[in-house]
Image (cartoon, rainbow, N blue to C red; front, side, top):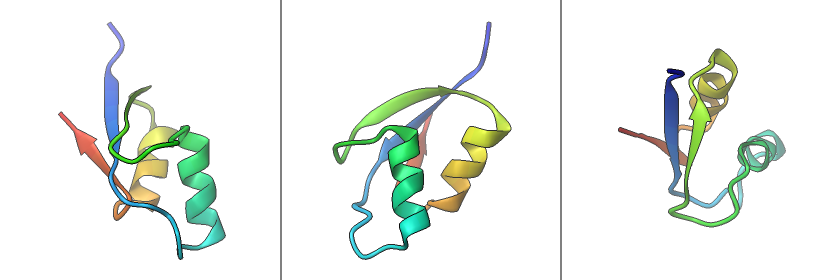
Length: 59
């Protein structure tokens, strides 16, 4: 069974850099408090690590 990573979108990227806004868009977030499941891969973890002030990893 493949491990999954749940990420919650907690803050708006308004006023942030273009790269941070693009990272949020690449993860597919459209609404605040939205929770999405992703495969636990280094690329997804890296994206979450780039915007720790905007997202939260949920257990």
